[in-house]
Image (cartoon, rainbow, N blue to C red):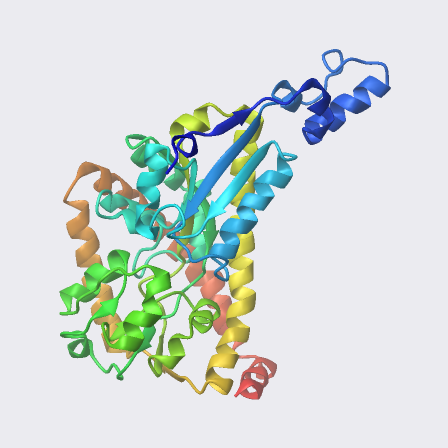
Length: 392
Ligand code: CA
């Protein structure tokens, strides 16, 4: 790697380049036409900084991978567009600049200013980080957003990463995931004994407790691992992503629900030194773009998963299976134990755990008479029943 690639390439716009500096430039130009200098006009503070920024975003995803890789691209484009080109971002897929699971360290060291991934990938150095991506039998996508933005989670997450010189922002959500692909049917917890199943994060800890091995394999390597028999089963995301990887070609049974990832949050990692050196309006643009993409990604997954599920079941003849209720009950019980044990390991994890559990208690109370009650109620509509029948 060249030395100049390790540092942000910083350029100053020439005087003539003012009008190319996006919104700020246009405001300045209009003020000049009205006979006012930019300083006289009470225009936005955005014109204070004309400096251009060339940043790199390393990601944990294969290039252009549906939903996740494309989500990273879209976020970068949104930031560029909102900044009027003042902040340019070059997106690198997993392995192009650094391997998928070295994204956190790359942002920490300043090799890249930005990273796009999921917090549970860093559990080796930061066990508490897992709570900010997915918790087995925990909060769903809507509730994770509520905990993040209005329940104190983002503040805790920021504190947790501060020691590493990294600033986190939620920047996407996959919605509830699928339980995974299996080469054989699963009837009880005993079927996990000796099973090698790719599963990251806290879910991986849970299935280890029932005798499985749970390696974390980056997305781009999953198909080959499953197809070659190196692993017996895998979870990945949901129909939209799983269809794109062709996982149905390597294992026939597709299980639900995704108890281990009920609403997985994607994260934007920002090198703290680079962040602090940004003018306030560019910081606000990054924050706004990340929050916009949280909603956009969730909408995309919800729209595409339904289409992909139909393709998998009807065109690819996938065997769709629900995990038995007694198995789910067992996994839920173990999940509680795993979370409790984690909380006892260090004070940072205890703090996050207490916040999560407190929020879940409140969220469950509302969900029971809100979304969950409605989801059940609409199934009573004969027209809904007819719609569901027409799909099969
Ligand atoms: Ca997953």
